[in-house]
Figure 1 (cartoon, one colour):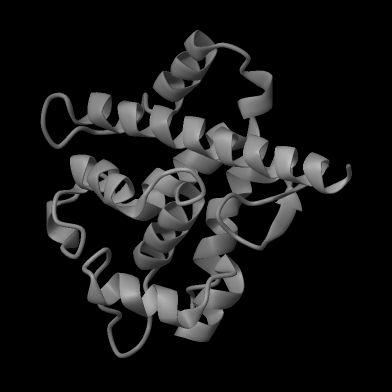
Figure 2 (figure 1 turned 90 degrees about the vertical axis):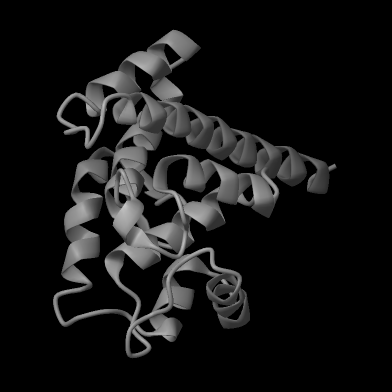
Length: 182
């Protein structure tokens, strides 16, 4: 069954969530993406992305090209903004990555965080309790090499919040759809 890859306009088989990373990496074989490509993938307006760069939510693109990490930061923000205010999203991302416009202090790059999230989100409907979510998160984080003690635990907390926010967004969208059908 196909699903929309979280935070994007792209459709793919839910069962192929582990291949999303390879699909994204192949889009960057020729270098970075221009703004029009980023807007096509995310469904966001160009001015919004440019505003996020100006406000320091992500580093400026180099030579007008966005990197995979920058695209994934944009997608992560886009995915969370359905239920969380921007200042909370920035606080969440800063909790694991320090200054948002400086990738050198990140404990996990945005692409790695996003692709872990996608694998979790693909199975979220099968995880019916908080304990099951936590177990799944802990499992996908098993191979993560901590740059300092406690880094993995921080990322796990962020992933819990991201999953909860993503599910809440989907539930809100479903409720709005049901209301429209009244």
